[in-house]
Length: 189
Image (cartoon, rainbow, N blue to C red; front, side):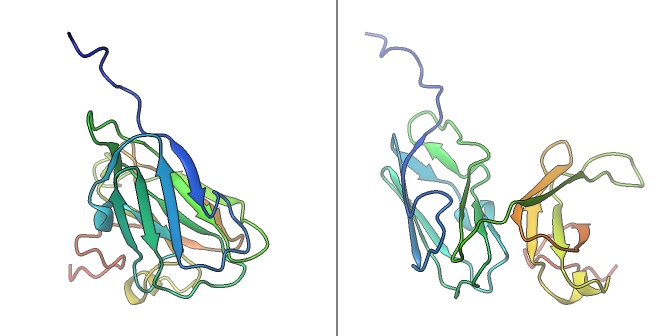
C-alpha cells in the first residue's frame, strides 16, 4: 500500500482554554488543543508576545497541546497577543500553521487598533526580513535605545509588518536589527 495521499494540511485549533478572544481573563495558563499531533519549534525565538512582557512566558508543545504559562502580572484593560509565527508544525509532514495569533484580555474589551507598513533599507532599496519593527509610546526618539518597546513584530519576507490588537494612541515606530534579542537599538556604530 502507498499509505494514501500526502498530508498537506497544517494543524487546526479545535479548543482553547480560555477561548480565543477571551475577556476578563484572570489566570496564568493558556491551553491550546489542535486536531493532530504538533511540535512547537523554537518557541523562545519564534513566538512574539505583545505587549512586551518583563519576563517571557514559558511555552511548551506536547502531543496535540500547547501550554503557555504566564510569568508576568497582567495589566488591566490591556489586550495581549501571542503570535506563533511559524513555530507550530504537524509532527509527520512539518506542515506549518502560518500567521496564528492568540488574543485575550484581562479587561472587558479587546483592543482593535492596528498599524501596518513596510520597511525598505534606504541605502539599497532592498528588504531585510531579519529586522523587527518596534512601537514606543514614549515620544523621545532615544527611547529605542533606552527601553524595551511596548510592541514589536517581525518583518515578513517582503518587508511588511502588522501590529494587531494594539491600544489606540500615539506611537513612534522604528525598524531595528535585533542581533542580541534585547529589542533595543544598542549597536556601537
